[in-house]
Amino acid sequence: MSRDGVLRVTDLVKRFGGFFALGGLSFHVSPGEILGLVGPNGSGKTTAINVISGLYAPDGGSVTFDDAAIGGTVSHKLVHLGINRTFQVPKPFLSLTVRQNVEVARAYGGRRAGATVTDDLLAEYRLAEYADRPAADLNSVQQKLLDLVRALATRPRLLLLDELAAGLNPTELDWISSKIKALAQRGTAIIVVEHLMGFIAQVTDRVIVMNAGKEIFEGTLAVAVQVPQVIEVFLGGEHAA
Amino acid sequence: MLRDFIRHFSLIVVPLVAVFAVLPAVYDNHLLLFNFVIFLALAQGVNIIYGFTGYLPFGYVGFFGAGAYGFAIVVMHLNAPALVAVAIAGLVAVLLGLLLTPLLRLTGAYFSIANLAAALAVLHFVANPALEAVTRGPYGVSLTGTFNPTMAYATALGILALTLAIVVFLKNSSFGLALQAVREDPVSAAMAGVPVVRMRVIAWLASALVAGLAGGAFAWYVSVFYPDNVFSSEFSIFAIVFALFGGVATIVGPIIGVLILYGVYNLIGFTTPQYFQLIYGLLIMGLVLFLPAGLVSLATRRGWHVP
Image (spheres, rainbow over the protein chains, first blue to last red):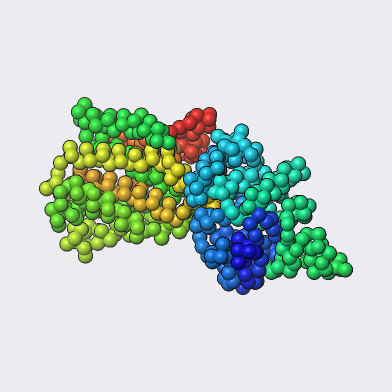
């Protein structure tokens, strides 16, 4: 199975009361691949990320990482296995310094840190000059980057990016997409949840289009925009060819 | 980090303990000195669970009282030596802490209220006349056999040193950093690889241990007490107010808080109690309004590092 993926999601179900946030979602990601997860609001993208990263236990289906079932495993153990993520609304440790935010992840991330040096990572993501300031002093883009640096400090093999690009200016977008591509080239599997289609087109190798908790398309974005079903869920029925 | 640990220990902990070791020789009110030592330990115990973990323990006295009664029971029924009984006092508090770990599922005010209720439950359990054969119920205990204020004071100092060592460790270790990360955002902390539940339980039990040991030393020192004495909510409130006044998640904050506020309490609290309550109230109101992060924030606001 390692032929076709480090992460494999099969018929994943997540219920909130009577509402099926995920109603049988299936996809996989391979090492070094950047997969885009797109779909209208409420289609289950973030729920999928939350289940994969251990925030929610699945109500059905399976999640495997390196062929081991990980559905329902608690987050910090998944981090030790090599899964990490960023959050749509960044969640830094506000009263700790920027450097301490990363040090925690380095100390507890579990995978022997080796090459990652906190200051190098901070410099790479343009946070070096704030290293000794509380994370609360950062603006929201910088807090997103700090989320990313904290995730990278645990040396993930699977990285889940939940709307990392929202709020970035065009220059920053180009810069962060080159960073993400470089991470993938080093073998990290990456899932990008995003509404900015330009950004998706720029970074992803493949996209999964979701609607109502299920995948309705898999392939490249260029093909996706030709598919009537995809156009229908994004723009409404009258636009479909 | 090890260097900072040694530095903080030798510059803060050693001098403080040394001063309180010498003071009985030059100052006659030994009970007052003993109370200072107990409150220094309790305020740091609150610091461990509130400052580093974010749980405000309104029922902190539950561990203190449980420790005092743990001490009394093994002395009364098993004739245990006092030092062994103090260790058992700590153990009893840790066991109570284990029993109460489900409270950690709650957060904020809900945790504080549940913790307060738990402390009251322990009080009424101990003070139950039906348990007179074991705890002496509401009639109180008298432990004349172990009475030795000098040794009890020395033991309390040892407990204070141990407590401060724990706080110095938390302040200078990735363990303490991870606890603070959990306090700030448990979800993010988990994504940093921190085992959130285990960390909280360890901090909770450490603070329970401190209060239990302090309760044991207190029982040893006073030797005659009633359930209402050792389960008095005054212990919780004072320990919390002292810690907050100085500033939590630091080593020196709770120390400053105890020295100033308990000092003020003893200076004017007995001579002119009518003014004391007024001054105390104003002091605390002023603090909450202008310095919610405690006195140490006067320094941290200016960018100075406070150990």
